[in-house]
Image (tube, rainbow, N blue to C red; front, side, top):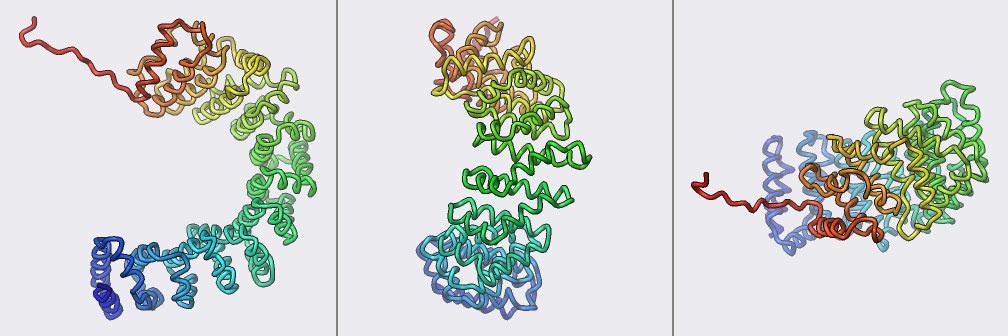
Length: 506
């Protein structure tokens, strides 16, 4: 069986006409695709891949479609074999393909190495080959982003391995990283890899810090180029969301420096461009450590409320996200409550945003309002429910009317966002009471005919599901029964009209 394929591959090397090559490769692919698993594995194991590799490295094979067809066939064959098997059999040939002029060839080989890196018992093959590792690291600087990202994934997996961690930041590998850092664009790919590795363990953070690369990233925050600072902030945000990473950044005085940037934002007109990145950074910190943020960096919260109050559409989105992150936890909600009138005032601005701003900001405002008001059932008590009711009432004179009006909008995205806010309040006693007395709202929620969008059907189903579990005596028994039937029938139930026309009826 293998003989037929081997003969075809050898014939491929003899052909000069591009169309003939394409036809032959199509034949191979179709015939191989018709094999059962056992036969396919036998062919994949028995074939000599050498002629394929020679075709990919030959100056005569310049047609992109031919190269892509060969790569498609090899990708299928590789996937049948064990990770690392191709590397063992064709070390020299496969390693050479990493620098092939065709991106699809480089990607083919790197994906095979990624399979090996993901296999806990096969990764040692890569760790033992310093030359190969250097080639893989260099591909992080590839012009093709897919190739670069695949190389990044391999290096990250190597860094997660204790033995790999020791190898990466030494000797020629360390120097290879350092050379790539000279290019601003490629440097952030390297920094992303380093931070992702640093997040995996205490030891990984220590080794990454000792390499000096984390300090290099931190130093970018002092660069005059605002875009470079924003890129650095984006990556450092990932480091700040785990406890040891945040501690490291505090030890390096990074958070204080960022606070100063916010405090002196008026000194430099360009600094305004930094605010979205700074808001995102501190928002993510607040999501995980709200009390620490409030107690150590109160200026951040003041700046957050100032941005929301300003209504500046350029930086309002990240500020809304940050307020949502800060409010997501119970601790964050209580910390905001302790600030007095700041939160009720901010919520009035949020109500203006969700009613009057461009659609993208309205949706963002609603999504974060849902985070601000949400309290998991197991965390609900009188104190937290009193707070969320107070905040909801602070939005405007008729907050439920505002949300219901949004839920009736004919546009799927804004309608869905409104229904998601309604779902949040429908799981809280005060919200259930508001919904039960709002004219026509129960009928609107039970009417399936007015929802044509799948997303809105799902969102409305979630509202009704929560109301079906409402506290006793808020809704009458008949309404609760309707809610439960709605839930039982599912979000996509369609009522069939059972009336039958009678022939001759007048």
